[in-house]
Image: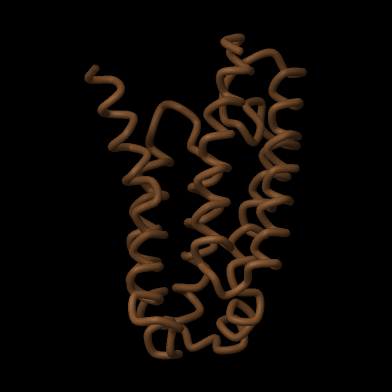
Amino acid sequence: MKRVALTIVEYLLGFLALAAFAALAFSGGAPSDERFIFAFKVAGCIALAELAALYFRAVPANRLIVGANLWLLAGSLAAYTGQWWWLKGYQRLGESGLFISILLVGFSTTAFSAVGFVAVQGERRRVLIASAVLLVAVLAALLASVLFRGTVQWAAVVPLIVLSWLGRLLKRFVSGGV
């Protein structure tokens, strides 16, 4: 029971930076430039702390969280350094930018990490299959983010939840549990 509770807390804390960003940027409706910049500055600091914590863990980091936090960190750095062209690019991409970041993490970890995009030790063939399935799912999430642009629940929240649960199932597949 303690292990399950710890897993749930770790999962919720993993997306804390993204939740903080969404709350700060979108709580009052469509974000203004000021709220957008403030949300990136705050969430980027949380993302940096999360990435540092993930780096020092013994088990491989959840690649979805890494991709989301790198997206937030890049936005935060742009906000702090006045790189308005970068933030305007983020605004043009909308929710799609998040999934592009996750895809980049997915492709690189599938290619260069023994545990792949799914971040679990196992037979290499199973790791590659599971990573490929998760990459295709992220592509589907990217498509959803384009189709539902501006509706944060359908463009980002629901696809992230689905990706997270799929990632858990794929970890079980790699471990031989499915």
